[in-house]
Amino acid sequence: MLALFLWIVSLSATSVAAPVAAVCDKALLRSITDSYVSAQTEGKPAALTATASGFAYFENDKTADITKGILASALKIDHKRSQHDTTNCSTYTELIITDSKHPYVIGTQMHLTEGQVSKVETIITDKGDWLFNATGTLSWAAKETWDPIPEAKRDTRAVIQAAADAYCDIFHDKSVKVPWGQPCARLEGGSYTGKGQSSDRCDVGIPNGVELTNRRYVIDEEYGTVDVFMSFAGIPDTHEFRVEGGKLRYVHTMTVTGK
Image (cartoon, rainbow, N blue to C red):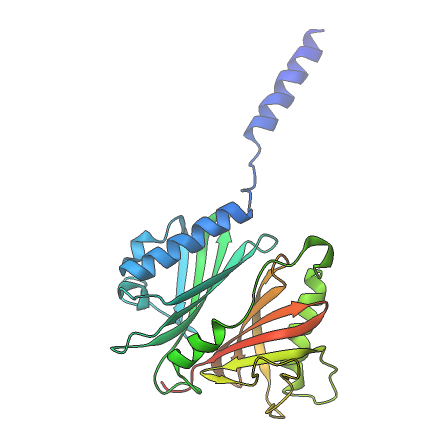
């Protein structure tokens, strides 16, 4: 009996001492994106909560000092929308700032480790970048519908990512079959391929022989979305997709060309 008792005590102690992985749920991720938006609105990087000890920060694919970067500038945000990936414990936020003093369109991925932000990557576009027009971007984005998809109609992560990858792959290989939706509209800087009609298409103006590499994904099945940070022929870029019924519905792009 004594031996049995000691074994139970030992097992209990081992169980208590075992590390418990941090839960990564929508509530946690939403709190992180809320703190990011607050930090950008206030111009106070310290408002970004729960950063890890090995925290890394990048702007336009270059290591940067968060205390001296875009988060140190208070910005009036006209549009914000976030994705929350509970599988990879990461987030993506799109911001549009139309302030005439300095307009921006910004995309930010944040990656968490054990419940803390371990990496922030930001794509910052402004005057001189590909088709940049913050007012036009806001006008078209405001007309789109990015509501939650009913659970029974949601695509799997694999389907959502495959749609994004097919789109990215066709830039290099025209034989790739892309699940184009119709309607489908692409917002590229302030340029829009749609007119708000059922005939809107995304399969227009796609170059050939361009490699889109080093892809980093944030996928949110609830909204059918995936954001892909990547190198667009060596240029910092983000493509965000909305997938409905396995087909592309919206594409938002930001490409840094003016720096």
